[in-house]
Length: 392
Image (tube, rainbow, N blue to C red; front, side, top):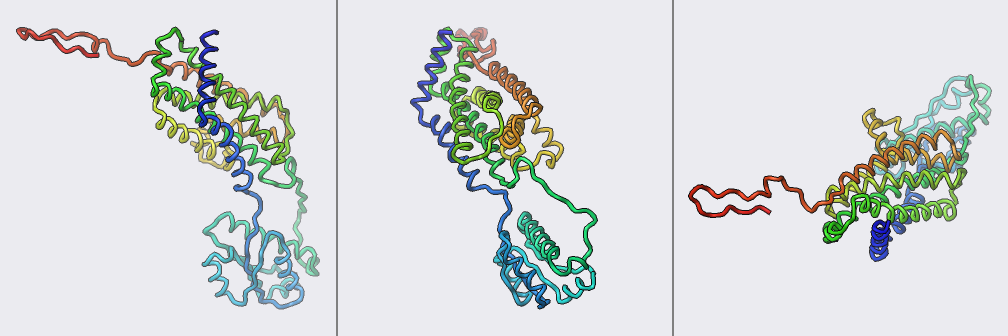
């Protein structure tokens, strides 16, 4: 214990003397969460849409006004189709709605009336917004117009109720989910440099000349950065709940418990990278590659895992962010669900223990490894009289 406490004390002093560790632990999360809060928005967007009306009747004029009154549409009126094509080609508008001259006549007869909706397919998501907005505005107008009785009514009326996030605010799940991305970066970046730094500076040789054991070195790296990571996690949660007012419906103890398991696995990834490579620059590059990109793309935060190819669906099973994103979004939005907490905690514990064992195995206690034949002095050749070279 004296040796372990001495190594922990040494590591804490190095952390306090190295401003980069404080920047990674506290400044990086602040910048990251600000980007996710104000720079990323998956909510419904306001699109600029062109309107051309070839049916100048008072009833259809109210439909045109409905597009202008929608909070999701910025409508611009055109007199000919050529101007609409030019505006879409120059990205001045994202789509257009053309009302044909027989629109009201068909509705009055109880027939299906057509609307032409043109969208810019170069931006797929925006094109989908244009289509859905145009359809929704037209259906709402039809339900309150004089053609409501003559138009064909749907066989089933649906009533939509949204649970957990009734305002459909995407920040309520993006910002908590971003904690998984941030904690992955922090856990891996903080530890991907520590062992490599010891080898580059020569302090590892000084430690190996003492009576330290492998478990002392491993725990001496885990414990200080685990404490720093938990402080950073607390800072992240404080920003989410207090500063950005993200609703939290779960249990703080459960949140900290599962978060500690996730941090444990992230530290293991970073320490494995650092122990194997023993070069700070190379370790930092590899840490970013194995940490940030999989956490962002394959965790289920930005893209649903079920919509991924089968290979990548199976690949996500070995990625800790997948389990933490599932847990933390549920904890914030729906509260503590025992099944979700238990399953994700078990997976994170297993992954963390496997990574800990790998760190223990990869931590070298020798300066170099040579084959036994390299330590032998070659015999002089017959009649040579010279001594062979000694390999060191």
